[in-house]
Image (tube, rainbow, N blue to C red; front, top):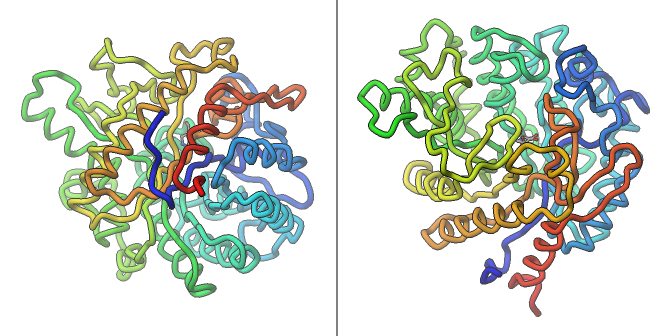
Length: 454
Ligand code: IFM
């Protein structure tokens, strides 16, 4: 067992609305792009959808009680934009807001600190129909208005706010490769979606701050150290590594922390980069209180990394232990956390960091195996990543918390219900919950923290 983290370090788990809530058309909720996408034949690998998934819209208390029994300090969840604003703008659905109000109260009652994510990929379908979602600039403005509606209701009790979750994935998988909602395969819209999300982030930070001055506000980015695909890379491959890194990581980091995008990336990809309106970069560069980092694995770049991007993530070290990340087919690479945090210290002013996601499924992608509750591989995975995290703190990074992905076996996007990643097993037919060994392991780890010692 680890030596404990410092007193204010928090440990919890993360979820997202579409992945767990169900109640997809209840109490006035509008459609989101994920409702429409998952109902389209052939889009979800196992034919499932998020109509019910973990059904937390009808019962969150069971899970909060379980989290409390596991000593969890905090819980990260997202708000469904179309539950609150069925059309994405305009009329507010009070019943939608009431749901999150009750959820927050129930968490606080158990002493669990809520971290709210405002956008975890479920754009209201009405905004997609009108503006192509974040491909349209208008959506950024409506996002900020939505942020204001939510903070007006929850801001007296929720202090930790995350504007966006993984804008790279939403732009890439949703609007470039078409594997996620809204299913658009169009490289020409990729950068528009990326830029407008960041613009929405900046506007939302302003909206949140105008409402209250006591909030802790950040953005969550997925981050991947990039490596060359071959062991003896030539200059061209090294150049691809740099480009891939700018495309996936630096575009977002530089936008948020420096108010500019990487010039080399823009000059190379000039046919598809968007026009940036005057003032946009200043808006995007709002001071944030923390950076949320979702860290799973590294990426490999080959010469033609960008066409088509995903095909080039190669298995460079077949002897590494594999973990069954659904999309990335990932290697476990805990040390990447140290690489990334070193970069944040040296180049981005050493921001406060929360690891807002990190997790795995069964290494062999075997569904039966991954449903088991004796998930020793997950414990091993967590202990390696937390070990690296501890080293990063010792090296000088200001990491304040760790959220494991995820609380419950949920709807894992295009992999549907067939990719269990929870520390709590869910039988989706009966909604029965069973805590996995990894859940108990985390419980004991938390019990051993300085913050728990009197
Ligand atoms: O399930 C996702 C989550 O919604 C975003 N980050 C990666 C997770 C695992 O794939």
